Image (cartoon, rainbow, N blue to C red; front, side, top):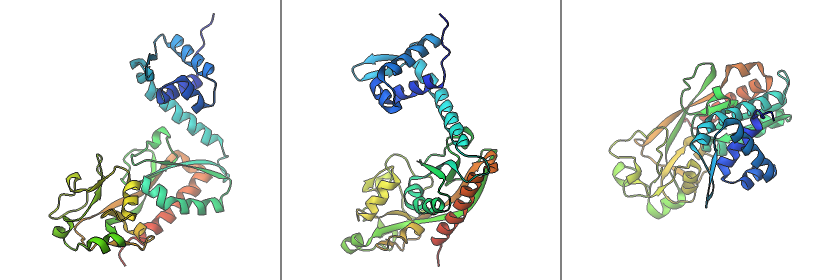
Amino acid sequence: MKQIEPGWEHYRTLLAVIKEGSLSAAARLLGLTQPTVGRHIDALEEALGIALFTRSQGGLVPTEGALALAPHAEAMASAAEALRRAASGEAEEDRGTIRITASEMIGTEVLPAILARFREAHPRIVIELMLSNRSEDLLQREADIAIRMIRPTQAALLAKKIGELRIGLHAHQNYIQAHGLPTTIDELRKHSIIGYDKEPSIRRPINVGIDYSRDLFAFCSDSDVAQFAALKAGLGIGMCQLGLAKKYPELVPLPVPQVRFDLEVWVVMHEDLKTSLRMRLMFDHLVKELAEYVTSGEPA
């Protein structure tokens, strides 16, 4: 009997079983039946001549062989998604799919309104938004367009610097009413500070006479969205983009300029995508609208 050469669907199933830990959960994720998922794994093991999973009380545990295959399968997944997006619209038509990656705060607080205006102008374009604080690799086509807070270093990328986001200390007016408004570094040490848990931000604040580290914080989270929610709830003093704080009048900037920092904002895409009309439209739209947002946070 001729051996079946494993295709993308087999490796997609492998990734799903690794992620979900069982055939049934992987089947639900993929929209397949459990027997089909089992056949995919059996065919892959037979073709490769290795065991991919071992059974345990907690479910299926990937072997070293399966884990070694995972990065290559993920690259195949990225390529398959890029092919799907490329095939979703003609190069010179404003239709198809665009996948954007951005940080949590930009993606949840800044982009929705910007993307809504884009969709009003181009209703045939589908937008996929991936929120991540890590730099997605555009060269591997994990996304079409990225909004980054650091200068891109890879070759073959079209990058436009928008400006610099000013970020400083803020507190909710209710917190200030209850605990007072610190105006010096010494006063700041006596307050509840919101900060990171295990992963520091891209940049540490410029600080004078204060160690802005985990030992200082009264509330810790590695989610920027969670930190912002805590700030709006009056839980303590935290960092906030000046442009974003202007959307929430109840957030009061603190007169402690020593604790602040700026983040560069870049819009980036692979240079091969500039031949696509929908990509150019989105790239130019993001450049224009994000520049207006960045400017809104500059001192008057």
